[in-house]
Length: 410
Image (tube, rainbow, N blue to C red; front, side, top):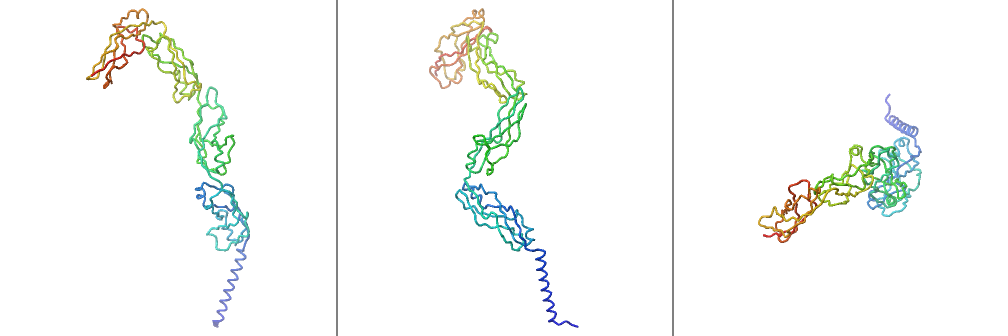
């Protein structure tokens, strides 16, 4: 029998009501309203860059979190975490230091969470407090502190660091209290140079550690090198240049100090038998001559003694000095277009050698030669250095430096 249209409509309406009731039942039973607490919700500050541009920063309260009691459907809670819910505080307009309090704030939920309503029942804390202070930036020197020991026969050298300075930013009063970035080494019985990447500690002038909670640094470690080398006592010497009739066998040399202590890498030190203080021209030594010489070392070595100069005394022994008047004066390299004549007619020249040989020398064996190279454009009386040649013997030499007065004309 055919069902009337009015009856069919009643069936449809009854089915729809039943479906709605079933949906409400399932929603309330399977996905009921739930009250739960979401913990450790981070507080996010917007406008930090603008704050730092004004030379300000946040200290206390910079990393705080809040807890919130929420009411929502169970399915909604499954999508909420402390990583996708936050509290946003705008600090971009702050211009003064001090303690700031926000008495009213809201939670920001992710857009992906269901559209079901979320009710915030309570928050802890009810207010958010943070502190704004002045911000400063400084370059802090890295320094080393050695608390260990080196092996017997070795010497500790100097620290070197890369980088030499650490850039530190943070609260002005904290940054200004920093004295240095200190690297501390405690190795024992070191017998070679130490080199490694090492941490450092920021300390104040009393050597106490500085609180780094709100500090930013451009490096966490530095490459530290501590030179450790073998030590050795090395004699000082001079190089004697024969001249004026004197050779190494004819002189007595004393050096004070006789030795110094140096340190360096084993290969560099072991091969070092002496340290030369330079040359001494015996042709310029008359009787006893005392000179002060700097002690120069190669960059691979360290002067452990700390003595930078030595006194060298040279005494001529067993030779005779004689003075001869010499008038044999000649010129070489006279500039083109110029002429020269000697105002000095006779020059007293000292010669030295064994007594029996010196007595045989006559003035005619000596030649005075003036080299006028580079005298172009010069006229009139000029004092010029001369070289003295002694012909006919190699056992006697000329002692000292000499000049004559020359007239140069065009």
